[in-house]
Structure formats: C-alpha cells, structure tokens
Image (cartoon, rainbow, N blue to C red; front, side):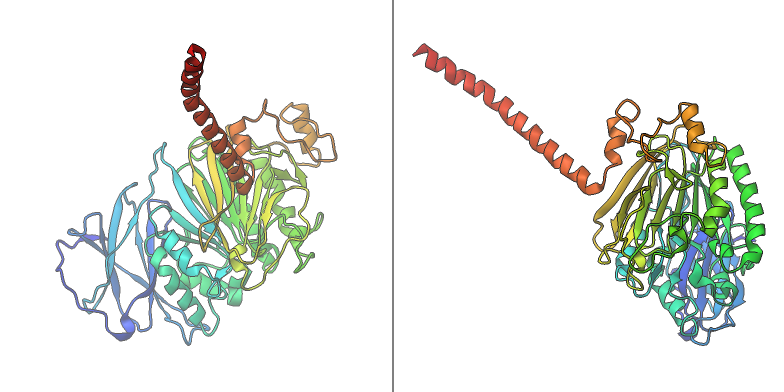
Length: 499
C-alpha cells in the first residue's frame, strides 16, 4: 500500500557494489493505467519505489522479490517488482528505486496513455532481436524518443535469456534500459524462451493479468490501450507444449467474445504471436510450417476463429525477413487494398534477427503484397492508431530510419467477417461485399469507385510513392513557372505589336 512520504532530501547515498539496480524496465499491469516496475541486483537487498506526478511529493511502495535460481550463476539473480495501480491517464509520473540502506537511483519518468477518444496512439513492434543485432543501440534511442506508448517484443528475446548462465539476458536488458525504463516493454514468448519451461522469461518479466513469477500455463494476455484491444499468444503451445493448447484456446475464445461485446469502445483487435500463420518460402528452408498450404499447426487452430471474430491484424516474427499480406483467409487474397478489408491482414517482421540467420524470400506467395529480406536492413514496425477507423503501419530500417514499407488500413465496419469455411469468399460475393475474382482466387485491385485515390496511394510501396510525389512536385513547379512567365510574355507581345 502506498503512503505519502512527504518531501524527500535532495541528496542520497550512492549505490555501492552488488546492490546497484540494473536492467530497469516497466510494463503495463492489468490495465494501461497500471504500471509494473522491475529491476535486478547481484546481491539481495530490500527495495522500495518512490513515485509521484510531482517529484517533490513522492509516495512509497515496498518491492516484491524473487530469486532466479536456475541457470543463473553469472546473472544478477535477485529480481524486484513493484505494481503501481490506478494511475491518471495522460499524466507523467516520476520514480526512483530506493534500497534499505537509503541509496537511491536516478529519477526516471513515464507517461500513462490517454483513454479518451480523439488521441493518436503509437507503438513500436519488433521480434527476434538479440545482442548481435547491429541496430540494437539505434533502436533503444528511437524507442526512448517520447513518441511511443509501448514497445512490443514478439518473441526471441536476447538470444537467449538463459545463455551463459543468464549473462546474455542481463546484458540485453541493460542495453534496453535506456528505453524500457521509460516506455512499457511488453513481451511475448517465442521458441527461444522455452528453456526450462520458460523459466527465465517467467521470472524476468511480469505481464498483465498474471501473478509473478508468471505461471507456465498463463503466458498469454490481452490489454486495452485507447481504441485497440491487444491480444498476445504463446504460439509454442501449438508445437512443443501441446498440453497447454486447450487452456489457451478456451481463454482466447472467451476473450474475443468479450472484445466483440465492447467493440464500440475498442474497435481494433490486433493479435501478436511469435510464429506466423503464413509466410513465403526462403533460401534457408522452404519447409517452414507457415509455408505449407495444408499442414500449418497454428493456422489450423486460429485462422477460422480470427475470421469469425473479426481480428484486424495478426503480427508475428520467427521468419527473419519482412512480409505483408493482402486481406487473407484460407490462402486466398480477398482484396488487393486495405479499405474495409474483409479478412485479417498478416504481417511477419522478424528482420531484426538477420545476424543470427538471414532468410531471403525466394518466391513470394500470391497473397503476398510486399516483402523485404535484405540482410543489411534490420527492421522494426511503427503502429500508429489514428482513430477508431484508421491506422498506419510503417516499417523502418533501424539503423537510419529509412522508410521501407507503409500502408493506411481503413476499417469502418469493425466486427466478424463472416462464417468460416472454404466458401467464405463466395458468400461475400453473393452478399455483394466483394467483386467476383476473374482468376482463381486472385481478385482484381479495387477501382477508384470502391477505393478512393488516397487509400490506393498508401497501399503502394514506399519507393513508388516517393517517385510519384517527386513527379508531382516537378509538375507543379513547372506549372508555377509557366504562370509566372505568362504576364511577361503578354507584355512583350504587346510591345512588339505596337511597333
């Protein structure tokens, strides 16, 4: 329980030796108005957190503790956690860590997201990032620039948290601290977190709607931020820990039904999971589960449910490249555009993992709208939710912020897409919600009658849009020059005619 600590002294003892807190990171609690603060020390010590909207009038909460006992001989194994509840939306808070000796950390700050309509919400989303990622330093500075409300890391964290008796996990989280001490760091487990039943993952992080350390059969959660209902899944249950499949699927069915009952409050449903449902074959392997047209384990469990419950976006990693689909269901591209899509859009972005394995796409599937597998470009995504009907998805090269891909997704009729089945496309055609496809499951691009030029423009690749804009600017400049020259030419003609 928090209590008012009054005005604190301006000077504190410095931390000495092994009680120095490290790996400081924050995350959302059960709601986006709750914040969890976590850190680690190499020596056991009692800690508290002092926090407030005004740094001159702080409150104090004692920290919970846990010990990282397995595969942790070289790790800072004493883990500390504080839960701050019912913070004010839109407010900035300050906090510092205080040991029982009286030593205190520097002051850190974070901002609680707004929960009122009319606010833009921006999130960074990436996957497959570790200590070898060349852009790790650049990315931490980008994430800390004050733009983002959260950073979602969709599996394969640090490569690996437990490696070298935990030292890799420690080093990675120290690197991330520049951003994660200020921006909620929301994690999703991947195949590289499976070691010892996700032991390091369950202890090092604390995610919404779960006790801490997190139970192995509860590594999934949902969270509302502004107009978005986020759902994160442990996709490994579909491959290596199948005994947890039923529990996660029961939870997911229930969560999606509740989300649709509140669709007017949180119209966007975005699901994050490490393994993709769809991917194109690569030079590394064309036998990946997501390449198959018939035997994808995750697709067989989730695709019909996502279609019937109206999931807008599924974002994954695992494949070390980038790929974006058209609105897609059962291997069929329902549209070649993103205005009022009639099926979920799938995005794979594991391109931060190029230094571990570079997977070059050799032949894009027919449903693939755009892909990039240049191993020189480690990519992260920026999800910008503009309002209840419009969101922007941009992908950048983490080393120089070069814009690699960008789309505007418009959904003015959120909700279930229809009844699942192989005839789903034909059913939409009968309802006149889609045009008949002249070729086998390859519908034509929407015409200007059904898709305004503005939306069609943002469906183009970034390089093409830049070329169009340069051409347009040159044309406009030529027109301006002509207009400026007309009066001078007229005067000259008049003078010549008088002669």
